[in-house]
Amino acid sequence: MTEPDKDQCDLLDGLRRGRPAAGQDPVKRSQIIEGARRVFIDKGFEAASMNDITREAGVSKGTIYVYFANKEELFEALIEEERGTIFKNMYDMLDRADDLRETLVKFGKVLSLKITSAKVIQAQRTVIGASDRIPELGARFYERGPKRGHDKVVVFLNAAIERGLLKIDDVDLAAYQFTELCLAGLFRQCIFAYRTKAPSQDEIDHIVRSGVGMFLKAYGTERLAAEESTQTIALEAKS
Image (cartoon, rainbow, N blue to C red; front, side, top):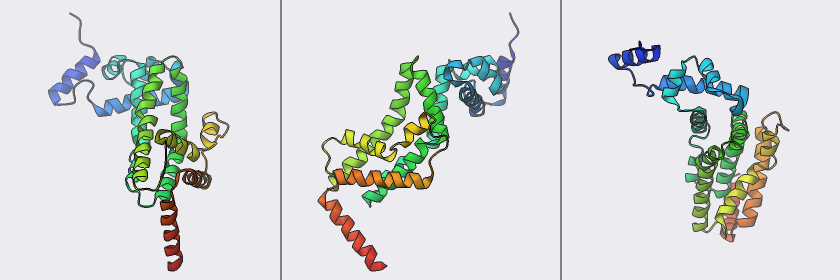
């Protein structure tokens, strides 16, 4: 009978002391994910190995496989954590839609700012690189991130249609059009490193306001125009 290795001893000791069971320690899991983040950024998904991640995270190979079955599972966990941090509560502003134009502008500015951030651009490049060999990974990334966000925009636009502020025949297409207008020119420039720095807030503001203006000219109703005219008159009266 062989002697237990260090990870088995740590597990037994942890159980005796009331520590989290194997694969359940959030600190250890975070340590592994942080190591993986540095390796994936440095080497990319294809070149990165579990040995690289083991060394960078400062854990044994036995420990890392208790938490993650393979490199793909670890990468997906990293992406989910990043997405939860970066996009947390971003769509909440769509629940407060008193002023349609300003809600679209505020949301569009936040969306554009986050999508063109260095972290998100790097993550998307890594996913794109991995998707050629593991297409299901790219599909899951899209379904759990961009597709969920898209569906929330669809819900928002449908609510505006019910209020009589928008008239849209193909809401699904219109939701894609809206996000593309908010990112006009920016995303491709960032993803292909044509632009080496993230766009400024002033640039984003200009692009988003222009995009929202085009969107509402295409889909806005007379009721929306009347409401905005009333708001303008009220603001002028106060000034």
